[in-house]
Image (tube, rainbow, N blue to C red; front, side, top):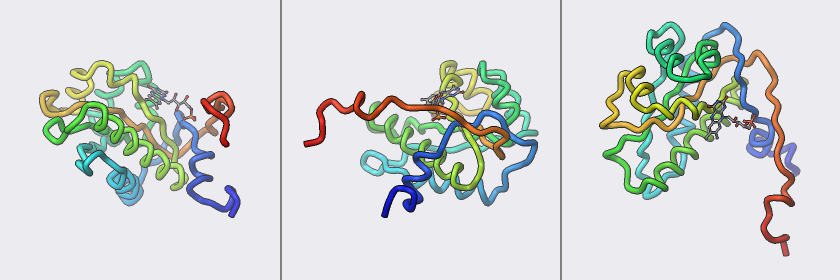
Length: 174
Ligand SMILES: Cc1cc2nc3c(=O)[nH]c(=O)nc-3n(C[C@H](O)[C@H](O)[C@H](O)COP(=O)(O)O)c2cc1C
């Protein structure tokens, strides 16, 4: 089997951040598939500390969230935003729970891509935890915001590149 025939490898290589969306909603069925992909991410001790809040365009929290980031245009244009938070009481290790959140977010990005939708991982929005959690009406004593995934039907082709593998590999394969 070459990489072209492997749907997971293909999705990994093809996924790009999408920051412009059509004016079309995303179905609850698609959202459930995406959230399920996140749910199945690995976590340390399988503690699954992530919690999700979906805020669709039209919900007043969608606009409140837009005001918390310099990427307001992306949030406003998205059909929905998925806030990924960690429930503090469910955490066991700062580092490992954050790593698990990353795996969870990437699972959702890949699911979104394979559903023919587009998304971007918004990280800058977590800089002001209090403002972002308050926009979501979530208690900062209970939750830590990890990222917001803005998504919708893509209205652009993403583009990005990567460093060559040789620049990343600390030692040649033997
Ligand atoms: C932790 C993290 C934070 C990010 N924050 C933002 C962000 O705030 N705004 C944005 O437009 N893209 C953000 N991105 C998306 C990256 O810019 C993007 O993944 C990178 O440029 C590679 O492009 P690609 O996703 O199209 O391959 C973030 C990605 C990660 C992993």
